[in-house]
Length: 185
Image 1 (cartoon, rainbow, N blue to C red):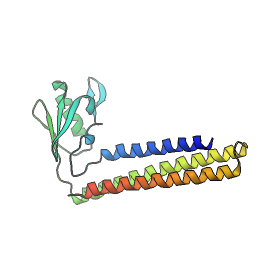
Image 2 (tube, rainbow, N blue to C red):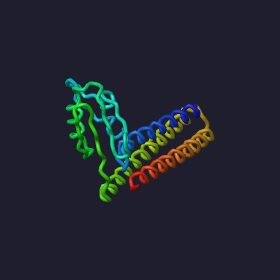
Image 3 (cartoon, rainbow, N blue to C red):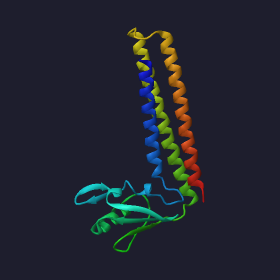
Image 4 (spheres, one colour):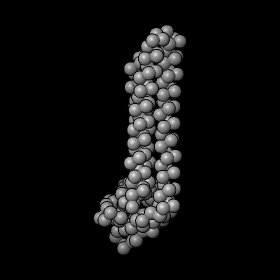
């Protein structure tokens, strides 16, 4: 029963890390990466569709993205969606493909991105701590229902705390890497 609770906690904590990594992949650094635009919602025949389903996205140069729509008639819709997004990049359209040139980040913009990353890291830490709280509560309920002994509950709480510490450390490492990417010129 305790192992099941810990296994459940581990899955939930790892999903918090995956969510964090997905969010941070969309944060613009000095380099071009397809993750910046993959999830931009494009109006395709009246339905919102992620850009990655409408076009191939490549990186021909370190500061440039090349978006090649599968259907050439969607070029204008894709361009409109990119302009409407919060990227702050003007697309260049030649009728068949769209090029996005990434301007170098200003110092002020780098600091804003670092603040955003730190806020997102804290949200992930809170999520992990909430999982720990929920599992500890479950262990307490198991003990009250006499399904486990007090010693088992204490052991379970210690294991959950070790897991929490390990995951929070991982989150910190992810944050350090992202901060280095943002501050890299």
